[in-house]
Image (cartoon, rainbow, N blue to C red; front, side):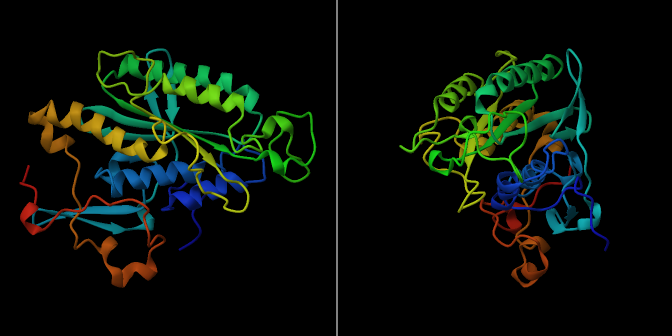
Length: 315
């Protein structure tokens, strides 16, 4: 099979997606540094979230088939798709990185993946963009579960090579790390600009009901990514353990809000809205096929049915 274009969804793990983001050295206008994160999110929404791959843009490289009341999941690279979904906002249309569409309901979940590789004093502009995008989408779709996943390169003070004075050129060949690109001080603490950004993002998360502020997201995460020795690894020291912005809380919050709005509160639509449980007999979980799959260790728990007795009723 010929190589797939970069924008076609590929099954990658979190470490790989973030390593590409943390070490990418070309210009960022192509979004090649952040696209793998889009793909990771889309694939995780299938494996862990239980959403059908054909409901998601970009379309993950999976095939879901119902057989004898069970849902079987397999890897199929030929089915993968790319691009972004254009969503009708209250103020303007918006191309969103990852979107789940349900027949008859429209977009029910969206995730925006944003990143910063330096110039952290400009984070105020990112806040304004985040508020505007969320408000725009929620005006038209107040029930839609929206997520905002922000990653940044965690350059440390002791890696500072020289001051560049440039804040708009991406880090890469011939581009030194400037003072404004530093995220972690010698003490191990984040710089003040990142602390302020974290505190502002914290005010934008945890929208729990459709009547709540439309400028808040259902889930927001901030992840600082090591660009050096452990490239792609998320720093565990910040945000703090009790922060709602910890990346490990991001997906579980999205699923919780989705189930509350689209499953528990609308039982008549359950056949359409419920999240699937994958049969343990699915080819994608077959250890004998592991060598032919791109990923062998997920890093999270797949949504696997307990057994044949848990087969879904026919809808």
